[in-house]
Image 1 (cartoon, rainbow, N blue to C red):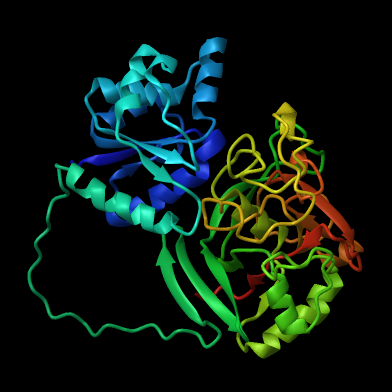
Image 2 (image 1 turned 135 degrees about the horizontal axis):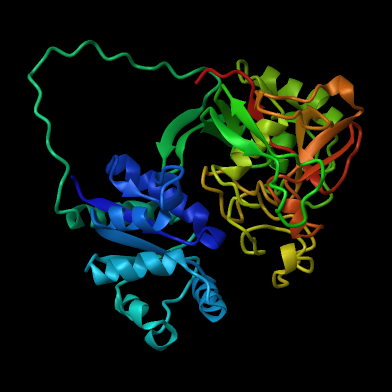
Length: 431
């Protein structure tokens, strides 16, 4: 079997980076990248599966975030098991090359701070990875360096020469300004005047919507239920900027100004659906943008995770813009910025979507009502069921609990609030 790449990471702090690594590497080395939970079948023994995959592993990427050692130490003091430690120690025993990937300024732990079975990690040559404009090029560099480390190359399949059928070139839809693929998957852009907005293609899928009963600081209206989304959709990778709003409407209602890359806020549900979106769709024929449903929004926010946040069990102000004086579930206090920040100022989630946690609440299409029990397919709460509309994601003013993936809020259609903005979805499912 071809050699494999094993990605070791802590879901509580580096899930988004591990997902970006996985998707980028999987395109170059198909079926040769292992990423714990997603690569292990239901009902399997986790320890046995780690051993099985390590037996076929030729290189391990150890994603180390700023709190990696702190969590290791906490688990050691509490006498708790640590699967990250298990993965690393067994890789070192087997002589598998371990490449530390230091995320967002994380430092290599010193030998004296590590248990005996992990001390060898501290002398491995590490690679730094920061969620900034150089992220993509660093990933490309990592791919180039890993290739020669996989000595058991995938078998070459020789097929008889055949006459290839004519290649059908996809005609780009008229509303698209540009399109492509990167470490997160497919993207496209549309343009209004000099303003360009990027969209991310979200594949159809199934997920758990709402929160489990044991999730800290949950609400009763977050009934956990299975949701099936049968159609893919294009979702804006950021909240709508003041630049785009001004270009379409000709005015800027926001409280916080001075940078057109800040999210537009103080816009009501009615402002968006009866003024902004009709004008935008008129200016770019075929664009057909609208507000996402609650299910579309949460599916994209989670980006394949089931934890309270797409970043894991906790968040920090370095990941999310919220009131750091009120951290989630007893975590440490942190920065309170007292205002919004530019829409790409903080890291994207594993699907390339920026600040779905915090900064500004985001309006959704749905009326506000209880979730139905049981599995739901392409759900949307009817707008005539309520005079209120849902908004999701938390904001800069309130604490960490409001930023959870499952958190729900609602307000009147005419509400204009400096905590509320929105992002857009393309309603037609054609690609």
